[in-house]
Length: 144
Image (cartoon, rainbow, N blue to C red; front, top):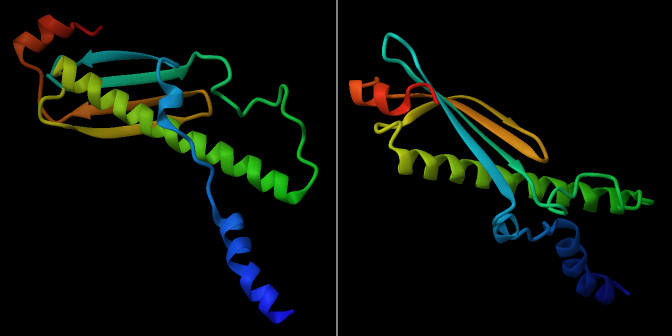
């Protein structure tokens, strides 16, 4: 009996501690984002980056079609899936912001993150650029 228990123990531990495997590719084409600039008169450059899920079925936090958990194990599994999806969505949010900033060259010397809000189907990052606004920045971005 002891040998059987010891041989099954690693399997039990692995099944309890494994996290759901969420593929970032699940989010490809499923996110709509926006980037808004705010250049103050003193040259301070602020921005707001927002992203939201637009593809049906990606946000699995909704209760429609998902049976209510009947056991504590099912509750833990559903919670683990939600947490994993939220973590991947947050990674996608940060990646989208970094790609946007790289593409439009708004914060050429980096930025300070002022706030981050994350929800199951949308997220927002507000920031302040390290560099001040040049005349070209004022013309190019004009508080879009």
